[in-house]
Picture 1: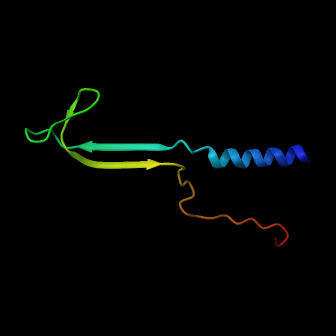
Picture 2: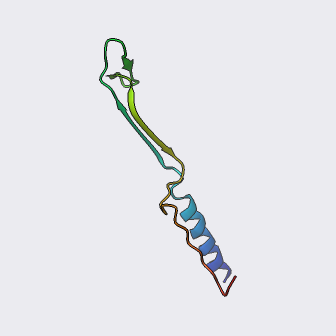
Length: 74
């Protein structure tokens, strides 16, 4: 029974930490102009930042839904 409990606990920890490395970075730039020119690390030239979306941490797969489990009223 102890190994079964340890396996369940390990599965729960794995499920909770599986998405911890999520990092999504999306940037869209305006076309470069004579006034605004940014040279990126890779050597490309872009204009000012138009859209930037950044996410860090665990993804919310549940879409803010919850799950309640009850065992014999506890």
